[in-house]
Image (tube, rainbow, N blue to C red; front, side, top):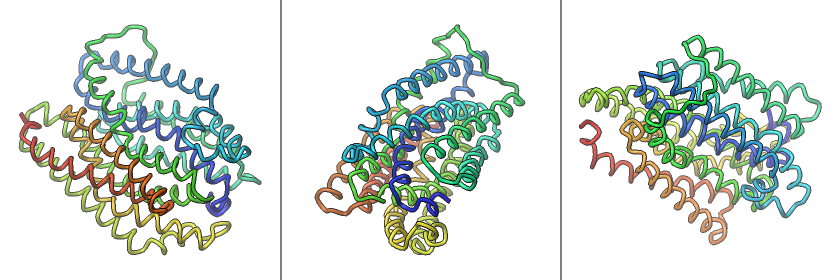
Length: 406
């Protein structure tokens, strides 16, 4: 809908670049680091569980509220950091700055949704939080259909309305499972240690893919107009099997992996591991081949209408193919992270994150400024980084497989 109305114009470029900013922090405080760190800690807490949850809720709410206020006061700083290429065009920079103030409060709303989702997942209830993004998509589609002009202000309003609806839904459902969050002034350091020992290393690790995509977007802001939109659309298609298979399998497996480790059930742990690894890798391989063989047809079917031209189809198709080679490695890496979090090997996850980020930064620079590969080079850099990290993770897993069950 957005592509047909906006094509690859300046408004679409601003939307896809600026909305990446709250989404990157969402990987830290939302479904990424927070969710994967919190679920095992909930299973460990057992006694004083609700007290533990209220402590996390209170800290999360006020930390994010302070962060949102800071960004609202200094939006120019964040646009300068995350989209430096926009500074060359004053009108574009001012529009991007204003749009950031519209959408950044979404990070508070969606992080609270992720907190409630972790509570649901710990009780092995996955359906509501998994269906929550449907509300977001429907809200943006409705606003796009009903608005005479799809401006940045309209898009920003739609994002916040969607966030509020997502939060209300998950508050209601979590309350039916026996928990409703409340603020607390009492903190038990012992009960928080397990959570923070997982959370701090996971802040970078769980958001690595989003950080790599954001790095791509920063570099893309220096490229010709349309590049951010082409990268965004191809990345959305990569995220489809990532969410449908990679994230879903990882989230469902995490409680089981954690339980088997607590029970020291070596046989069942190995069974869950092999099933999770084989399924994510094979599904990623099938999805990647599908995109590589039919990239142009897929892009035409989904986007070739309205303001989205055949040139946009070709450009988006090329970056989709470049991303697609990474899919089997990205999907299985998602599952590996659940294994590492369950086994409390968070320092290694942090190491993987730093390696991936470093490789991506170096290759981005080489592919753009040395080899002049444009937005395709950015996608290839992310792919090479994902494959490199996957190889390191495999070697580590095979060397330490016994330590996970002892």
